[in-house]
Amino acid sequence: MVDPDPFPYECLRSFTESGQERVLNCDDLLPAFLYVVIRARLRRLGAEITYLDEFTRGYRGLGQADMMFTLLHSCYVQICREKSLV
Image (cartoon, rainbow, N blue to C red; front, top):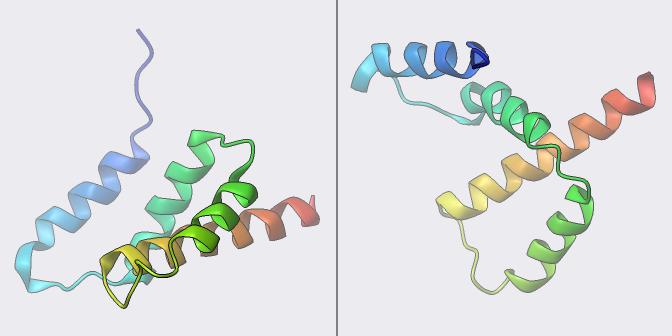
């Protein structure tokens, strides 16, 4: 059995230890979200984001779903920038 990578658990532990004293924002979530997106190895992530953008515009607002979509798109842009540097 392969040991799981400890990074996501460390992130989650640091968030849960702070409890309700700390309000999480996108800057806090971006590293963990980026890690999950990279580990998912989605081959057509750009196409999936475009699809979501085109077909969910009427359903998205200023809520949590829109924040998560923006976070996903930010991860994709960061991954593309990192790839162009290599």
